[in-house]
Image (cartoon, rainbow, N blue to C red):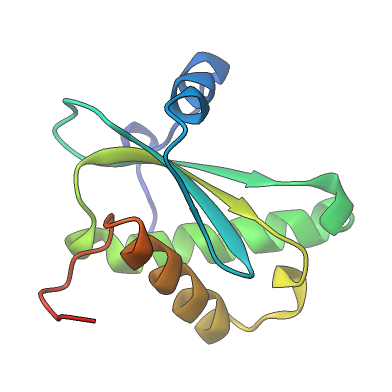
Length: 117
């Protein structure tokens, strides 16, 4: 389950637009910035700071995030958003990453599953 390139925020200009909208939501492990666009589907950008560890570890975190987003795909609204990993995420298992990511995406109203939380 991979995310196609059309579902990714890649350009610096796009990241800047999302950050400048200043709609951010956070929990202990992640920060999510979102921007409402007229895209036919969501787009996600990932940011993992060098402070979290060496390249192998940062790439592992990004792989976990991409996999979690791919699993959440049916529940995500059509907005652009950026996920920023905070310190501590490097020690989490995949299930813990999913749980924390789902929580912050629900806070931001990007994840909608029909349940009332």
